Image (cartoon, rainbow, N blue to C red):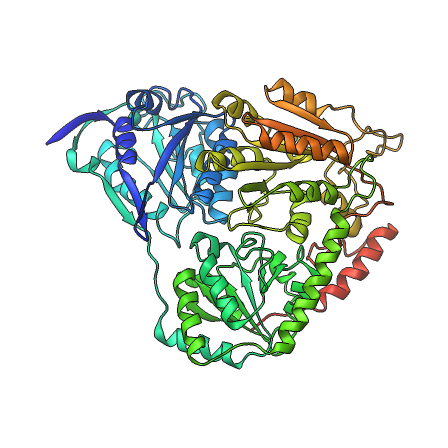
Length: 625
């Protein structure tokens, strides 16, 4: 039997019938479709979404990039078992997807992109928004999505959709390969009718694998751990993707090995777990970084070992240090010339725990006492950063986080991605649940926070979801506030005004750039941005987009506003201007280096001094072989 449908209608019906299953839990793979319509998709996918509104929910976006961010936020909150699709027109609508696609792929988070494309039949050539490279007739702007997609296909004939759609879902549900998947859809093909076999629309359940470790690799891993005297676990995002938090807690409790976390892995253990030592690397805690410097075995669990984690190759100083990498991806399992343990994080941790328990392995009491005391000292530093002795003054950024920390419980989710906030959060935030800390730092994309918070809230409507946003990142992409208001998605925005790119300003100063071009200020007589702060009222801007705004001028105001926003059942923003003078206490400085190359020759004293410091750090870099 066949059914006569357009390509777009067939795709919508197919997607509505796809499910994932892991550990007996079944979820719909594509929970909804985001869309902005133009001539490239309005009569194809636009019509199909109207035709099948009963089986495919729709969300109206304002910016194509932010629609991808919302889908990614939803996917992460859904443990990668469910995601959203995103459809755009051809031309700028399609190319606006590239940044979001890169973010999804870097972070191994599934999202389905359905950009319109130029006519496959070429009845008029060129059509509106068509790229015309003189060397190829089959290239369109959608080809910019190839390098940032885990799977890409252009469907130029109706029958091509069947194998292409199946391959797309295979990649979306693969725990190793998943990321952005792009099906480019020529606008004439979208509207073309075809007789489809009924089997194409049958319910399909895609099992998300939990591979176990190879016995030889497991035996080598056990030997490596048993030989270690100062082991350290580095928990990455793979712990969360696998839902291996309990398995990690059991492993850490049984062996007493301390656990540090990357930005993606923070929250793998609760902040008050005896073995949790906080963030590691350039934005990490002093406790975790000192353990990393002296570790003789680093056990990476679901981590990619980015330069922030390794302090650009300078962190692991022990001359005898070795690496054991538990990762579902062999590519990451072999990094730093480590022993690979290629397996699902939860499966692998369970196997390691059982094998080590059989040998009675645990670290020495002296090692436990050392990191426990160091952790206590760090917590005292956090308390000092959060404390505000004078409640009627403007808060510092750490005090803003302290006010939210005092209010939040394990049901709250904080979303952040860029600026100075990720460093402060990684060092200071006390994660209370496995999914409270939602930091997108693989791509660190400004503008991610607000749309991603919408995606998180759609996946977990019962949770309090906070988008922590600086003024720089807010100005990049505030448009989905309109979507939150339109759909009644009660996210909370904590908007921190510090008059510029604070993080990059600090970095610029440290590398001899003298904070050039990083402040939101009027130009001075010498052409630099060192005049008065710009009279931009971001709170009024938020209100103009339809969201309720609570202004907080002091620490006392902030505490009251946060409490009011948390209790609100409508989208609400708390706006606060922070104290940024050099005389006030901020977060502790970086506890490890990060490589940002400095000008090798310069006449300005700041750059010359920065280069001298840079060369000292570079000389300590190691290649772990």
